Amino acid sequence: CCFPLQSTTTAVLLPKGAVAAFTSPAGDSYSNIRERRFFFFALFTIITSINRTAAFTSPPLGSYSNVGYRQSNSCAWLTTITGSSGGDLLLSPSVYETIESGKIAVVPDFLPQSEIVPLRSDAQNLWDNKRFSTDALASYGSRGKFDPAKDRAVLRLPQWKNEDLGTFETRRRFGDLMAGVRSELAYKLNRPNLDTGAATSLYGRGSTEISYTRFGPGAFLKRHVDEHHEELKGTDGWTKPTRRSISWLIYLNERDWDGSVHGGQLRCFERKNRTRGRLSATFGGDLQVGWLRATALDPYERPVFLDGKKHNHGDCAMYLLDEGESGRTYITKDFQTNPIMYVAGGEELVKKMLIADRPDMARRFYLIEHTKSAITDLLAGNKDYAGSGEDAQLDEELEDVNPRGGTLVLFDSVTLPHEVMATKNRERWACSGWFHEDQQPLSS
Image 1: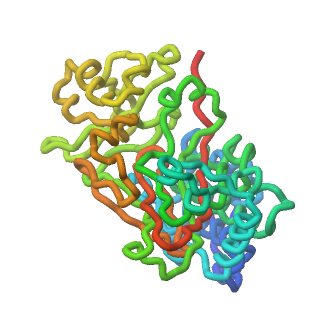
Image 2: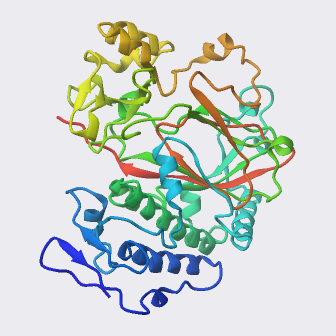
Image 3: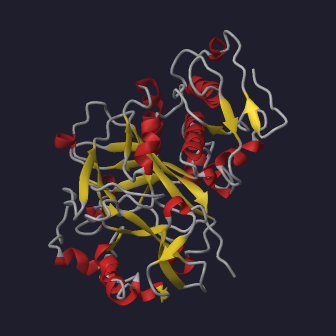
């Protein structure tokens, strides 16, 4: 149905009945979900709108479709889509728009009950056989007698990948499904490194990190972000081959889960004002570390990135991307990240020491997530905090997600602070993980 021309444009002919040839398989099994992904990803790439011819033009070097050339038998070489009816992809366009805006994307009933049950059964059996590891991140690990049944527990990657443990075929098929999600995200978010390199081959099948998680009654996680710039992760920050890019969970709980009764909500601290420009990471790999707040003259929040490569290791500077990402504007002096970015109150140090000559910009600057220490909770009066949920900070709004069975959530790992509120009277189960990208290299 399609053929390449000798120019850089590919024409696509849709003979009568071509759409019928892409009929979706019946049923809700993983194999059928994967077949639909392959069928309709090709159809989505070919068709720009119903009943008209589509035209595709070659993308700039380094975009996702160039990565797709290695998939020579899958029509992935068809490139920039000029318009689409949406097809039957795994995720809707609104999911990508939500992630790109820095918010959490929630997809109810992503998994049918027929697929939730075998995953939950496998997870329960592995928990009963003591294959999970507790991490003592819940309140029960920090005070009183530690009770592993009430803490957060994880089936770590070596156990997840072990073909001799539990029902491995269930986990394998689930990994294949998440590989499809990853491919779609890489293409639609223009993050080509999600779907290539060590991030796809070195660790988990379908997702770089992938696991079962269980929260016992009372377990919670305090507010945090899932990924930080290499310079903010200590001396080993630059040694890791990959870094987290997209966080995801699929809940395996009962579908009648009510957060007001059972707790366990995922609370996200989203930006109240609109953002402008590319968030999270530049195409060169620099990660976002802060924001410039919106003002009356500039109604958008602007992402602030940290350049740790332009200078010697440990000597950095912050910058804004210019419109169209054609250049960058540095807003700070060169500085050592340690101690300024490692101590509580680092945000004020940045304002007073690094942006002092631009008071208008200093007033707007703030970090994505404040550096915390043991004294932080004491000063905030949170010594006995037990997972009831933190309040939103200035310019934030709350989004609470009930962990109902089958729900998929996706969000950017760098820019969205979140917490897990305390579970009440039930166990809270999920498949969880992170899609990684290969980490940027450190210039010599």
